[in-house]
Image 1: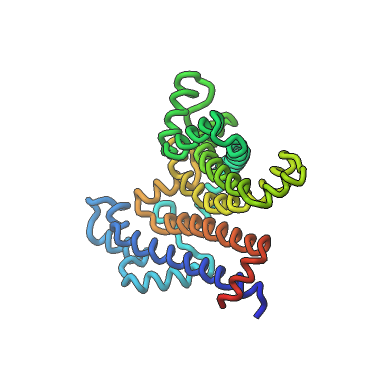
Image 2: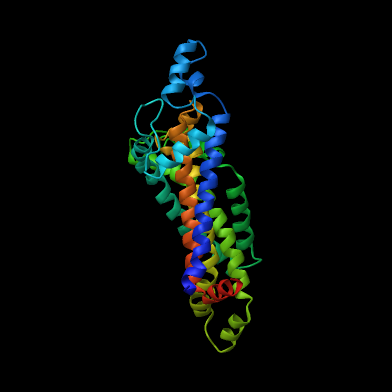
Length: 313
């Protein structure tokens, strides 16, 4: 068995098990949370209509039968149809995905472009007024919920200044406030984490030795401190990647953005089981894949991890 397989095999198996747990948990909780027939047809619906609805969607079968059917169908990329729209749930989600990605990708770029330089700058000016100001702003950034930040931005830039629309996705200016809402909170977390990682690296002996050899401070930071500090930051970024999908739910609701988040809210309210399951599976796949990728990259860039893992086998 090669060292690469010994290192990556358990991580891939763990990722697959995590996704299976999420699928199972979601499946059980959704069916225990209420009757879709009553929710969609209404409490005044006749008993024969309710029974016909449950029979049509397989809800009259025992839970384990429904689960086995769902898993077997999912293995063939069949995730069921929407009870509301009558269309494949996967198709509905893919139709909304471009609008959500149009928010997520600029927000992720904003997160990294602001968070990393600000955190590194604060670390290089540790215990100064610059550092303290940055830390105060980061605390504000990651403690304020995204929906509160979104409402605050609407109040300032839409209602008071009239610069950007408060909702919709019909104009290029409509992207500004949702992207800021989604990106600033992540930037605060990345900045704080980058500062801590940089401070830890700058205190290492090899940094002191490089400085003692006459290497300029700028070269020390650029060639020694920053490349080592950025690795754990990338791990955190991988965790945030999946979190952005969940964060988009709140942001899209605040700004009336017709993406996956808004579809999830409507689907949960109406017990549209297939659509909710597809979206939560998508979130789980995104988070698990990002974590797995970061774990594997760790092994690529740090051979000591492969050696440790091999030894533990």
